[in-house]
Length: 178
Image 1 (tube, one colour):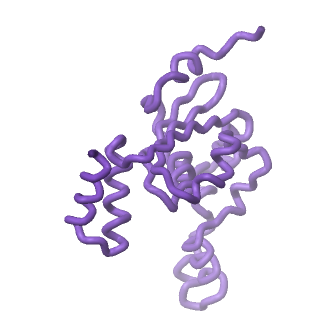
Image 2 (tube, rainbow, N blue to C red):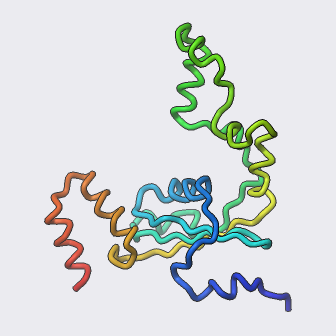
Image 3 (tube, rainbow, N blue to C red):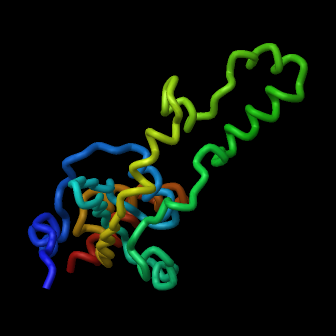
């Protein structure tokens, strides 16, 4: 039998283990994966054997068919990060190339955010760790938003965005308690 990673042995029984690394790119990506439900802040833990991400998600009917729950590993081996532009980046890039006013305004802007992440060097070297290191995702699906404070806060925000009054949100949360 092979030796089990000691980090995995320590973390396997815990539901919400803390992170030892702050990594905004991975956290934003995991939040983007579960954007249609309430999500806690992802906790990233790194070791020499891999990267582990722990996130709590509020149970939702669409989660049953979510592909990340079936295979909880993030694979960036075939990704092309330099071609990944967001909606705002694409718009700015298009304006900078076509419109005469914005062409002069954005003349010095030659980098997208991923290229800027690498600084003067090749940006793929800054992102190479994601291609070489396995990224394991642990998703804790909670049915009661009161079990996680960040999930509860996101639940309240999403309900307020839908136009639900605060007293009805509190009543729903109190019925979940009892």
